Amino acid sequence: MLFLILAFVTRRLFVLMGAEFLGMVLIFVYVGAVATLFLFVIMMLDVDFTELRSGFLDYLPIGLVIGGYSSPNCWLVGGGWVINAGRRQVDYRGDPQ
Image (cartoon, rainbow, N blue to C red; front, side):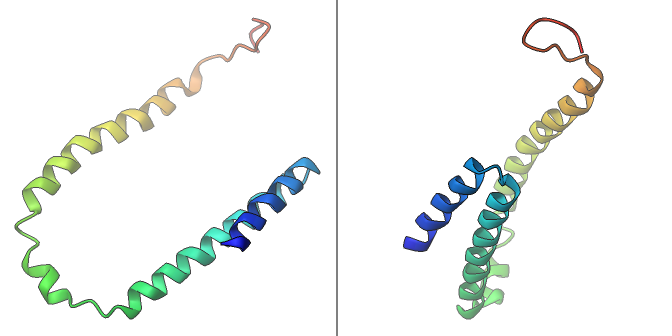
């Protein structure tokens, strides 16, 4: 836990010195290491997949409802970025760029 705090403090120092890329790389490497650790822990649990597959159809309707609700929301957000890509930007002084 101490290394996590040290990584964030070091990242701030890199950003203050103007090395933003190095600060972000430090965080990405640390997050990747923690994710790999979680992956290895999950792999060592030896989960029985036959039991998990037996209850799949019980949860299928609620999964379809959640997926049907969240998919259009993601499309609207992504489509908003594409639609607004051609708009002219205005800086803080009010002059069009």
